[in-house]
Image (cartoon, rainbow, N blue to C red):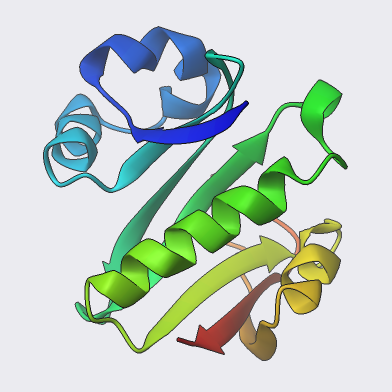
Length: 139
């Protein structure tokens, strides 16, 4: 059975690779502010998502991960719908996501109703990466 819960400090070991570059104080803030979720299937963690507020008033999904064994089975869609519903209940009118142009995430987000909104070039060491594209959706 699919479920999503707010992450707790106890969830950190499940996602140590992702949290490595996240300062401890920021991880604690995500937990405190309920901006980090654990995605579960049959009570086992299979993924996570977290968000910030861009411009201080638009929820921006900063990290979304479903492990490879569970991709393509509808869990990502269910997680996104859960997050969108929660953001709607919190009174937000728009949400945003981003993905690198060489990642398949852009196709997933477009299927979910997101539209392209622009991109940025990150070419300053140590943050170099392919073009980062932004997508948004009205709630």
